[in-house]
Image (cartoon, rainbow, N blue to C red; front, side, top):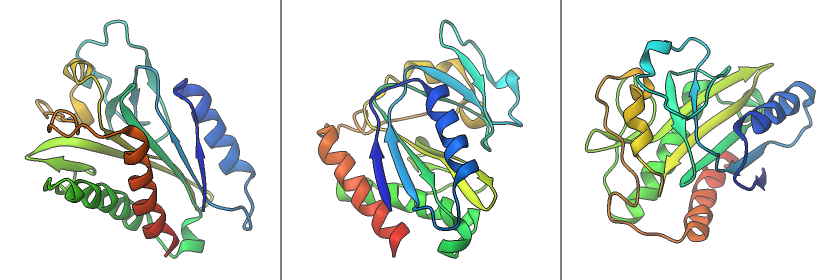
Length: 200
């Protein structure tokens, strides 16, 4: 499993790189995790309802090819793109979503925060507030897109949308839960948990 860290950057550019990587990979291509943060943007899944954008303001909106509804990305949110060969791993999409959710649940457990899943609403929740979102695309048996985790993101832009298509779904962050963690340490912990679950 190869891990690549990008600087905070443009969502569209990384998205294009994921498409190209997936389209050109072979059965021998090493799986990769891409870790980044994005400049502010709202993204809509390919079948998402635009009516779930209440007020985008000055934040750009982009429809992409992942599953799921509308969400917000911005600085202070760790993005982990999961580019893996499902068949080679012996996984299906549901397995992968479970692994991604479990990685965040286990991370939060380290800080004595109890997190959980919600039926028919992929992601991770703390007291019914969403702290991590998941959207996956499968092409040629391989995945891209992935997980976003709110560690110190401005939560105000989430009021401009029905997050993940749910009216009045509250969103939280690690900082909002009074955990102020160094980003480098946080990234290392997430990497260790995720790679352990995806490699083994």
